[in-house]
Length: 149
Image 1 (tube, rainbow, N blue to C red):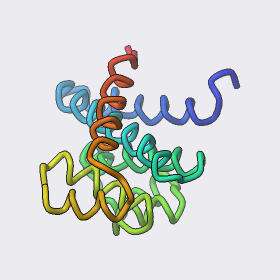
Image 2 (image 1 turned 90 degrees about the vertical axis):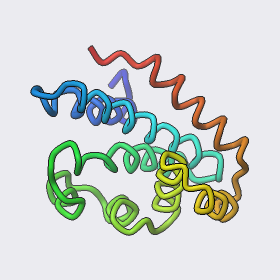
Image 3 (image 1 turned 135 degrees about the horizontal axis):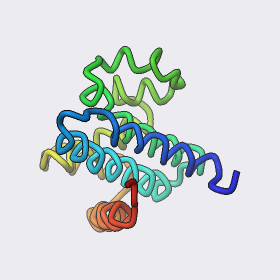
């Protein structure tokens, strides 16, 4: 109750990554960092483009869940039933549709250095490169302050 539903959900999702693969701690730690930073960056960008707080929370969720298939060796199609996620989140993860899907695709394009895709998506979402850089730096700084152990 003290943490609040949003913060509790964020911690539970991130905790999923910390205990996922005991045999390969480096792999799960790397995925944890990538998922956390991706989720936070998507949350920040969602707020920047004027989505509601609920949508920004879902953006974080989409970012974190975007690596669950790799973490748990399951297809993205299986995620919906396994985690009982809503249709909007599922469609964003699987088809990159809707504002959350577009944000996910944008963040993946940034991570993969796909410059041409990035330029198009930034423009479509009404963002600027400084918006992206600022969100990325805020997400990195946020993760540095996260203590999971």
